[in-house]
Length: 433
Image 1 (cartoon, rainbow, N blue to C red):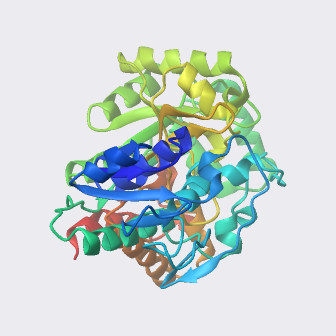
Image 2: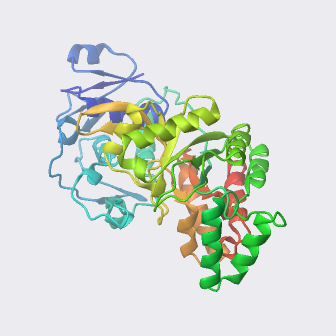
Image 3: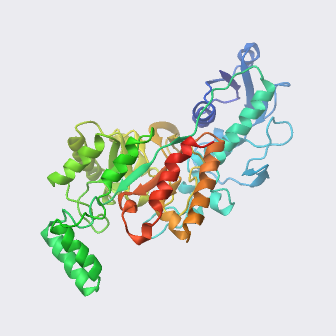
């Protein structure tokens, strides 16, 4: 165990030390504000305060971990070997930055509570983030800093054996609409036919009619292919099905359709299944509760995980609603149009409520890549190159890669050409050195 001496044991301090020490590095951590207790401790120990007590392993603390609420914080981003950091703390510290305060700033999403311009869907944008502006969005900096901390600890306590972590993958399959043409109902089908005609989309009209008549496979129905890939990998996929009511934003399949329910049950036999909460459920607890109960009725078990439509999060309300409904995990934290680490980490972490100053039980599994973000790269070679760079960043810190692909990404649509190969490259990355 690592014992940490500090002048004040705050909720923020305990939260971030446990993420870095326990979740990333795999070591237990304890805290004391009693100097005598610290002195007699014979194992690994460090002080985290304003001044060192003696010649112990010491990291100078920034005030953010002892504050409450939101304050104006001056951030001076500096280079640190091959990465960047902030909260420089001088020469007396064992490492040159207060990585705990910097990590808390990123993990708590402090900047998303501050005034910012939202996009058309009311989302916090990648280009507004500190990581994008300072060019470290594509590095899991919290994990990189943790490993630098580990290296410094190892020099001071060479006899201590750190646990060994391995690189993992958690593929997410997002299903906003299980079918493109099937199970849409008479009115929606007729409307789709008219739209194809008046838009001169005769190829779409031809495909639609053949699918409806049963002569052609629905292009969005790629589930057998995905499940087959699941059977040949040791990593369990997670599917998120939209089962909310039809609206301006969500145009999925009617959850009362027996064939749709059968599909969800079929997928649940092989993979984990969560709820893709509708756009309207994001701001309405009653709608979210209805969708949760609907999914639990289909799965015949309690719902453990959710993802919000359009990857929209309203902090802290969105996460408080999940906690109130006892949904344990969220997979919404990420950017739809940029690859990178929105919370600075590739290790699942718990949501810290800045308003209530409390660590919550909600586990945040931030995703690092959405298929849509790779469309900006023209050639398949460029896509592969960029994908490999992100994978290598995560591998260097033995993190968990969370990519999001949609069911329609595996269709034969020209737009998604080569994406099956990219998905297979991700799955194969766990077997490469």
